Amino acid sequence: MSESVPVRCPACRREHVYAAPSYPCVCGAPVAPPLDPRGVATAVTHRVWDEDWVIVACGACGRRDEWPQPELGCPCGTVLRIPVDGPRSEVQPVREPGAVAGAGGRPAFRPVSIRTARDAVTAAALYLRWLGYGDIRRADQRPPSGIGLAARGVLAQVDPTVRPASLRDVECLWLTAMTESTGCVYFSLAGYADDARAGADDLGVPLFVLDLTGTPQPVNEPADELNTTGAGAG
Image: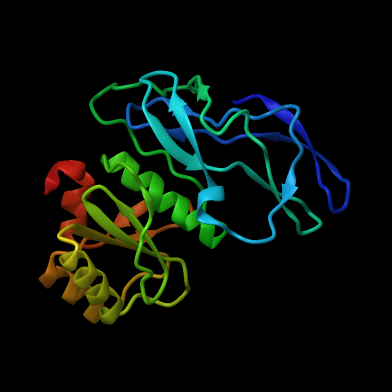
């Protein structure tokens, strides 16, 4: 577990004790953003992509990646942004039972539970990083539905709604990826319409369903292949 820090809600003045969650580096070592014990939590009033992520270096391999900015939901309804000890600080890996870097090839994916739309985006971003894609960021072009992510070599669409993704959703993602000469992958919480799955098979678009544990489940052959081989598949 990472070090706990005291947190006071600025809205209701309630006291909390918070420990940052750990996330899996590509090398297999869990890392956690370093918390600032002297910092003051602030209320999240609106979302800005750059403020939702911090850059942390893995203490095991030195790889620098973007990780979700630590946040805490207060019972009063306020979402608190927890300050980190320098957004570009290095952090040592969090030691967890069975978390051995590089053991048995690519390490197992460590999911994050999905409770909000932001959690779904976080889960998809962590999965893309686990697959081997780097430089994950918000896509320049906003998709017709859901949230777009981009990385070196891939465009991803994350649909956190309760509506199954449609054929048009899949085709729009594929067309956008074609214009940018890159691959694409779709993540949906509610699954896919039958014609969307058939169309994705014809176009070679990997489809994943995000379960509430945050684990992407492949639902077609291109997704199975990507899940098995990682970013080197293409």
